[in-house]
Length: 419
Image (cartoon, rainbow, N blue to C red; front, top):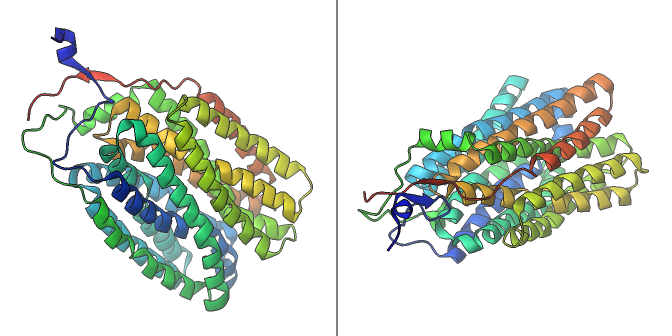
């Protein structure tokens, strides 16, 4: 017979609520992976539009960079709310709305003729669309329908799908721009974004069984608990650095290479290599997350990024040095995503996983905003990206240290009562 203390307390790592019938893991992974492939694949190629749009419209690079920065910030700001809605009403509705916004934002991006209009379409609309079609929403479904012992691996598979989307979509987007023009390419991608709607049907979760025990924790209490946890704060700080590094590189590296006399094909190949090697990096991170402390995985990733950047910017720049750097960075690119989200689920449980994942991701997007905006701002000011590269190195060292104190033990709170 359990002791009174055990009757009154339980671990957050235990299932928070039991659906009437859970979705199969294969179905969740297939549909979730395809959704992430489309949503992340489309956005990863936005750096290819920097020069054709700014040259055609007569804008500065900062104008384009500011829109991309606002996109990342809007994605981060809307993320917790999209996650909250997905946790409460199901991911299906959020994904359908996100798909419609994604398609509309791409069309409006093509039609924008002023910096303000471009900021609203490529920035605000697409940012909100991405908050409802990417990791936080999909990971919430994975967390609720995949057994804890398989959760990190499942998240690694979904993240690897997003990486494969980058590998697949970047050459396609470059081909579309070259053969159909940058505007028509955006129209075609808008049509492709609508394919998320039918895929969302595979993530439509059954209703909860009446009378099932539910944790007596409100949204406000969940947020207060998370922000009061030092490990959550350290994860959030580290994720800022992840956003800064990857979005700066993803948006500005094509122009950085062109400034140094590289052919456009080198940049296209580099972005594709990032996506290809990220498939292996994210899968490996998810696999290792089942076998070793996730904080060690995260610290190693951030430190390795800093080392890779230092070697890249100090060594002679050649096409092969670009390809090697892209391959190494690709292996480390989104490999932070599975362990970070798995730690959130492990500490706080899965009831509010989409919302809390969205909160952590907001920090990532603030970093993304700073990375992409500072890249454009400091380039226009100094004529070089050198300062931003070194900022990325210093931040990587900080993130490696910040993840070391993270503790992955589930929180303990009052036991659930029958509804």
